[in-house]
Length: 257
Ligand code: APR
Image (cartoon, rainbow, N blue to C red):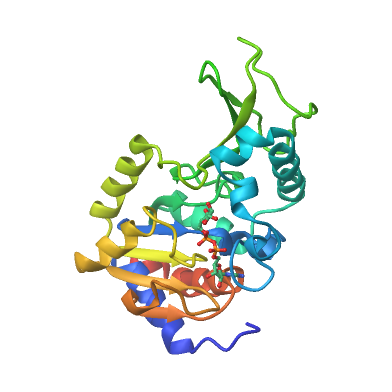
């Protein structure tokens, strides 16, 4: 463990996960994919330090220059296509298979949770591996790693311009996905907050409301965040390394189940 995470914090977190097995939910952000080489949005090296979101991730940006927006998304797709799930993605998928973790509510669009084997993944901000027709509204799954060739991909049904099926700034989160996420949060007893700055609404309302309802939050993040004060335990380190250690501690005495 390159960062010094107090072992007592790790064992307390592992104990909470065992004691609440089956009622543990993960809420993830860009930081969970950082060790896979996928840039985050904020903090050092964040994408929003180098690019202006209003030029690349808003409906107006797409309307005024769809070619530039597609270029940026295809660049991000090329980085993600080469990325492998981190230990954190893999441990969450393993814990879901074992009935420890309910599933994942993610703000990420990279598809790495599914690639690691997670089955219940709610993508609040859509998927970079799906397109949507701006005319007829049809959605098309590209499949992980399949980057459109055309500069301006077209709908095969109506010929309309396709856009990435992700949620841009100034756009609402799909209500059906948000309501599914709310139901999962209401059933959960422990929420693992992994790799998110917790500044984007309404996604961040989910852990904030969970804390208000007295649920236990465990934060996994090398930095202090908007949600840190709500966390019972703060594991200050990289998610991949921390989940690898948590997996060892949770598995230590299988008899606990
Ligand atoms: N392990 C865990 N956390 C990490 C790691 C790591 N290895 N590296 C960085 N982080 C943390 C950072 O400290 C930061 O708190 O990940 C967080 C990333 O924060 P953001 O870049 O703001 O990403 P996120 O919170 O997911 O952003 C939410 O903003 O731009 C929109 O739609 C976009 O879904 C995104 C939303």
